[in-house]
Image (cartoon, rainbow, N blue to C red; front, side, top):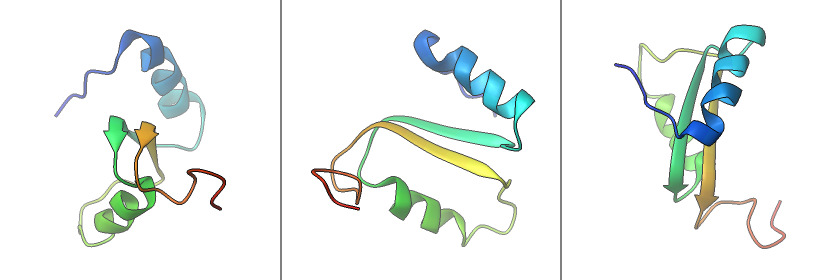
Length: 68
């Protein structure tokens, strides 16, 4: 499956996957929580790692509103 990224991040994703240790990028315009999504990947037996989960906006994540 090929992911089509928005033009403004496509080059950054290509550089991450080709020039760093990151092997796969999951990008979302909006996501509840990147951490919850990443934890859900653990249950998959064929998940590619290292992996970056990136969201332009998250509405229930730990990194919101000063949360850490």
